[in-house]
Amino acid sequence: MTASTTAVPVRVPRGLRGPLAPMRFEATVEDCAVTYGEIPPELNGGFYRNGPAWKRPTIQGLDTPYSMDGMIQALVFREGRADFRNRWTRTPKYLAEEAAGRALFEWSDAHFGDWRAWALGEVERNSRTAGVPQGTNGVNVVPFGNQILALGENNAPVALDPITLETIGVVPWSAELGTAMVARAHPGDGAFAAHPKWDERTGELYGWSYSDRPPYVTLHWVAPGGKVRSRPLEDAPYNTVAHDVWLTERYLVVPFQPFTVGQDRIRAGHSAYAWDPALPMSLALVDRDDLDGPVRWISADFEAEYVMHMLSANHVGNTIVLDAPIFDRPPFQFEDRFAPGDGFVPFWKLATSGIGRWVVDLERGTMRTEKLGDRPVELPKVDERYYGRPYEWAFLTAGDPQPDGGMRMNTVVRRNVRTGAEEEYLVDEDRHVTVFEGTLAPRSPDAPEGDGFFLVPVCRFAERTSEFLIFDTRGFSDGPITRIALPFQIGWSPHGHWMDFS
Ligand SMILES: [Fe+2]
Image 1 (tube, protein in one colour):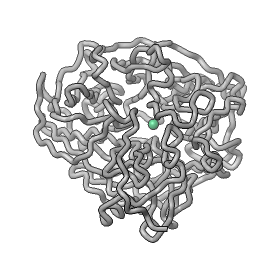
Image 2 (image 1 turned 120 degrees about the vertical axis):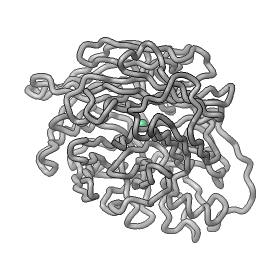
Image 3 (image 1 turned 45 degrees about the vertical axis):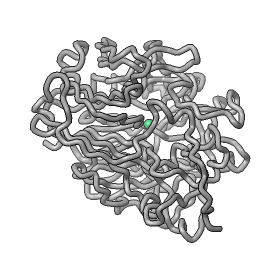
Image 4 (image 1 turned 180 degrees about the vertical axis):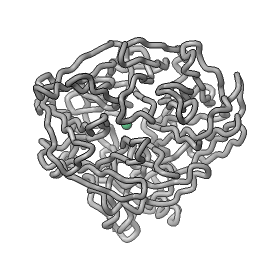
């Protein structure tokens, strides 16, 4: 079958307007305007963000989250100045469509045309799409060696140059990665997590892939040179959306939560995602020093709840304290509350999460949950130099619960996870201002944990302008010490990280 040549009107989902409206252009803004304060001269590195931004409408006329091409935004700091660039990641899909000058891909779930459409289904294969991976790499971006990796969870990482944002290409170790829930377009079309962790001291990247077919989750630990060691979790109880994990001093901790995904659901006319709280929750503890050794499974005896993104973890006596915002259920749309034809609703309008932790008792082999606050918090960040090490400082975006059950994020928080003490700053109460996920830039490579500058993107979507705010952790609640202005709307990007050049 060949793709239709009939022009299809662009139907932008309502949820992708306003602050979600993606940039549809590539910009370079050198020496960005500083409207308040000064850029700390200690900053020497880049703040990278990744998000879906449609280059062109899909054949099906609906820009579903995973069909939109990933776009990297970079704010690079050197010698007291900041340069902004944004570029689409030149994935194989992007390059094929660029060569054709139009969209080529159709997804089996995009024809739903409503909240069920994620572009998680199989794509229509024809002469133009044969052998071309469908991944768009638009979820997260992390530093790895001297490159940054654009990640999309259902496909292999794509490496980019951290200064120019030129795409280098799919990582050479992609063939060693597991298969996601869509068929491989060719043997190198592997999958890798969107939220891998890394150990600053060794450079090891701790990732995984997941699928709706056994073994469901396969771990992929990547050495700095690109050597991959893999291990399937052969006793995995069911397929789970393995979006994020904890890395402790001793373990990689993979949660099995009853948030599942499946091609069979799409074929039956449902959303790929499902929530089945009757399934038991458990954790897989994988020894960091013995990837091929026995996996310890810990069962939860409390009612199902949902952790989407993790802070980090501490071993305390014979327990492991796993910190995270906790939802009652995933902030996604399911059939118990939504009907075919309903529109897409972004996650922060669906549910709220409060700070909490799961505590694993290693002696008894049990775990319990503790909720430590009611205020909505999400987008948890830590000092990433301390992934897999004891830690103390958490950074969160907080907000107010909304009458419709969602949360409006407007505040940044620095929290001591050991004492529970918090410092906070209300960025703006204007509902036309949105605070996005921040990142911590350490004051120096050997600065104490949590000490440095917290960089926060802010979108003023009524004015169609944006800011990057810089908070000094020594005086966090005093507000930003620097405001950097951009003359356009940067739009929503789910995740980003800091890469230090020092
Ligand atoms: Fe995420």
